[in-house]
Length: 168
Picture 1 (cartoon, rainbow, N blue to C red):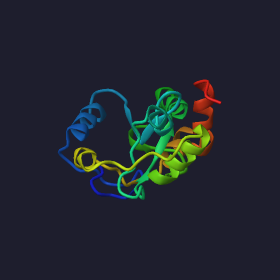
Picture 2: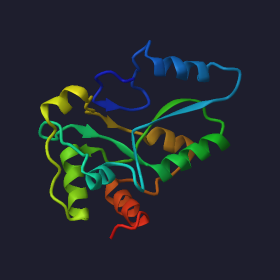
Picture 3: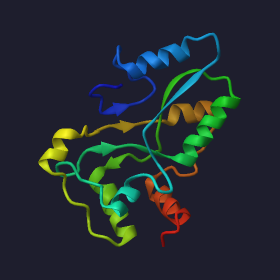
């Protein structure tokens, strides 16, 4: 939706004509009040880099220097609740405060899980998969809705997700 933009905030233009933007336009232009949340990678108990590393499906693309932003599912839910109860409108990117390189999150999760670093992607995996390289600033919608993140960083959110899943 943001094309090749490497840094995204609430002022970043979207690529017109994509199915998602058409769908958002239908919602935003309807005869009702609406607010669209555009979440970065959603993680939480059983979902995210830590879960795919546990399952053995996480792969590093290239050297893992691509940036990824994320949001904990509980924080996304808090934003959705505030949006439902508020009167703000528009479409907003949603992310925590700490985008990081794929290699960094993999190393963090591998250390927490006491497992080796995940392997690099194979040539066929590289050809089939779109790799993100984007840092998302979701602070504007949080300020507008008055929401403070419970997990402003994967460094607090992933250990909490693992604990909730029963992983020690």
